[in-house]
Length: 306
Image 1: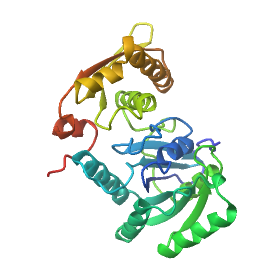
Image 2: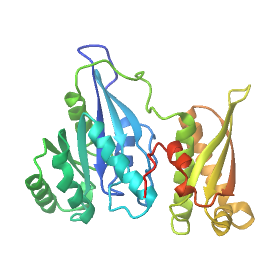
Image 3: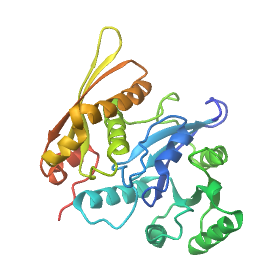
Image 4: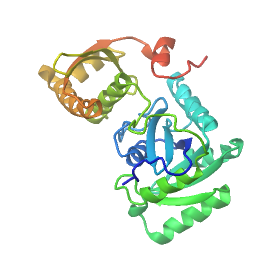
């Protein structure tokens, strides 16, 4: 549990960029630190595309956590935009935290990230994730190897999934935030507009349901959000794919797949919005959407040139 926000003592506020290889557990850790779902989680790698910010409170400190896309060797335009976005988030933050999945170490992506950490003139923490899944002796060897490769301020061992070790990490992050006024209301958990967060939630459910069948080149846009007289929200979203056969996969036989995606998304969106939600999903083909600069702007990404 986080400490209740209070006005005693000097206020602190700053940005922490979480970087790491795809599927290291960054989104899960952000959600744990915040205590609410603000970033999508999927076992399909590279699901975080743009920077999602979660806001954690610890005593008199406000910690703005930047969940960046996983860093890897990009091949396509969208992938290049994601990786550029991740390094940009790290460069703009007050503190950088490298998250490492100890079950996958050593891995080429993490080794490449460590090779570039020296370019960032920021304080850096090392966070070892999934520590409950390997032997203690092996864990200590990993920590020693990584700290020899780069001079981290401190090393933390956590399980982002269970929350083990997260309270200690949150306290340290709070202590390292610079003195200054809070940038957001103390009850706010994310700076993302609800329309964007709702689209991300539906995209998460899409990946959960079709992680093997559907490629990365699909996106979700919230086309309409209307608050009704009874306080509930009518939301219309469109899932865009690049080919007709992908549209049929999303719809499923007799519409069963899109129905299950909608039911799962509706529950999480209602929790995020704090209101009853009427969700209507549509699936459309938009060829080569991943080469459209406008789509990148909507996702908060810069459109990379070839």
